[in-house]
Length: 250
Image (tube, rainbow, N blue to C red; front, side):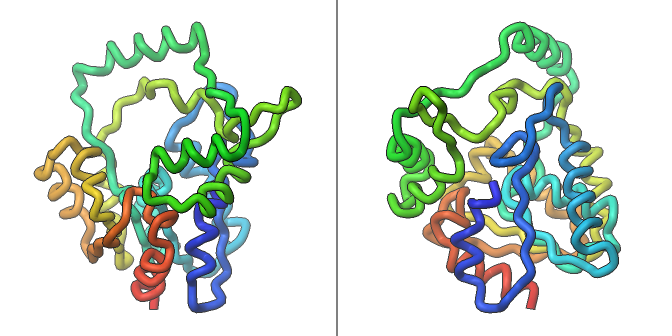
């Protein structure tokens, strides 16, 4: 969500013009009735860029899912992006084609009874859930995020500002061979930001060969580690995160 980058923006040394959107199905953005697909996210990003910067080059920063969206967009329009920063969002584990029938079956069964999200009794409870996911998150920052990530219902409970349909399995396989052709088209300098938490290793299931294959697709790649961090590096180490971004752009 856009509020996630508040801590990073506060640490930037220059006065940048920054657009931080809520992706569809998150925060204050509308929910999609049928589900969520990467081409739609890329179209949303394209629309935002065309609205705010129709002519000038942009610097594009994406974290996690946002990084994957940013990478696809830049592969489509390499001439639009001046610098690309991807924070642990540079591909997903490849899936074997044999998994397709079972994933589609699971998705069809999930559509019979759509998932729901757990309600919380207070903002403090939402904040504790965030701290459980990211133990290094301070209570002050967790409460700030809780105020933006949840909303109070008429019954007094708090629910997350996210469409429960995000919990459904995606019936479309992630095709890394297809994604690589997007990445190969990226001509601008690209920065991969890692945390030192081991998140990428776990996410990619220790498949170092695939990680190396992914990085080989970028013709102009630099990598940097954000130390003492976690996957949510912009929450835990916003000063280091901001410094890495500005140093790269400058």
